[in-house]
Amino acid sequence: MAADTPALPSVTDARDERDEQAGRRILRLMSGFVAVGYLAYALMTSSLVIDSTAVMQPWWTVLAVILTFGTGLALGPAGRWADVRGIRLVAAVAACGYALSLALWWFAWSGAELNVVGGIWMSQFPGLAAIAAALAFRPMIAFGYLVVVNSAVIVVSHVLRPADLNGPLFVDIAWGCSYSLIFVSAAVMAIRTAGILDRTRSEAYRATAAAAAADARSTERSRFDALTHDNVMSTLLTASRRGGSPELAQDARAALAAVERAAVGDSADAVGGNDAISQVRAAVGLVDPTLTVAVDADDALPSYPGEAVSAIASATAEAVRNSRRHAGAGATTTVTVTASASSLRAEIRDDGRGFDPTHIPASRLGIAVSIRGRIRRIEGGDAAVMSRPGGGTRVVVEWSA
Image (cartoon, rainbow, N blue to C red; front, side):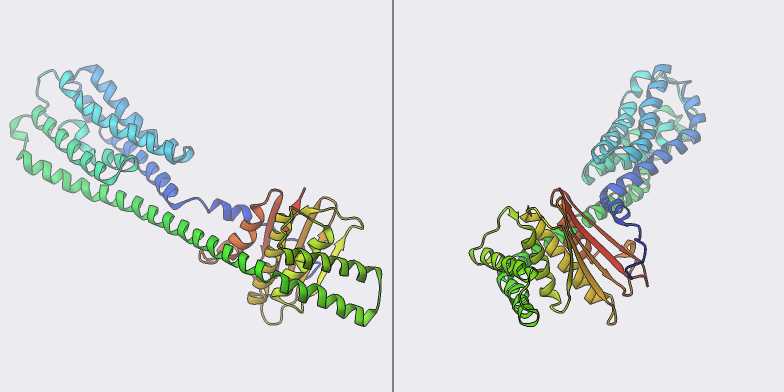
């Protein structure tokens, strides 16, 4: 983009918000779904709850409503504010609350019959409790839970109702399990699919990190040749064209120091200011030897952390590489390095076709890993990528003390 174009808002926060793992998003969505289901069944079965008080002790009705609907509704707030462990814990409490209420019915039954076709009110939603179990436990435990609670609640309904209202016990159990199994299986598959997506994404990042490490080793091996080409040769060329000058002498000393350090394999913790600028120039020169790096530096520069200098140089080279690859044939790219007593900053601009940073495909990890990730791994590092379709691109990588 042109130099006078106002800075575009960074999209870093928007990308970070979308980095939440798929498994966590699925748990949040499903916990909200289950909570809404419990609310709906609480409203629909209210009359059955009242009817059951004729044959059940009041203490059981109150306790069962709390253990069943209270814990189920708690999944709503848990899905909104709790982490994965908290969601699973609340889901486990909801599943156990339903089962405990069912287990206590015998101690509260008065012995009278419940003349209601639907049976005890808990028989209306064993599948929903099993979905809560699927959120909390392994799939086989959730399926086993479904079979147990569904069979138990149908047996309870058969015991409470008059015989003429009951169908064949085995058929009722088989039908209830089969019907609920559809929804529980869908929940289990959604959770498993989300887990597969998370693992695939983690493996992709690990593979990218390994590739970045290999690239870093290759860059380190070629650093001496790059420094020779971009520092020594450029210094000699400047000398042949312009003759001696204080700036030439400074560049020559920086080039010799950089070459010496590369030759002995020294990766000192601290890198002098001139050497830091030379490293950035060398990294850019590897990508595009024709690109001139503009420098805006204080007269007296401090030493910078070697890790910060290396990260900024590599990220700058990656930004230039992306610009040359995607900005378009006629685009102009500029690189400016700003060095001060407390910071080292590189800004890469182009006036190319630009892009929408919020719609970068998941397979394009260059910005996320090679630029943002590389800079943010160092203390004091920050990176911003600003672009828009047709408006060019601006990348800023910076280290601050």
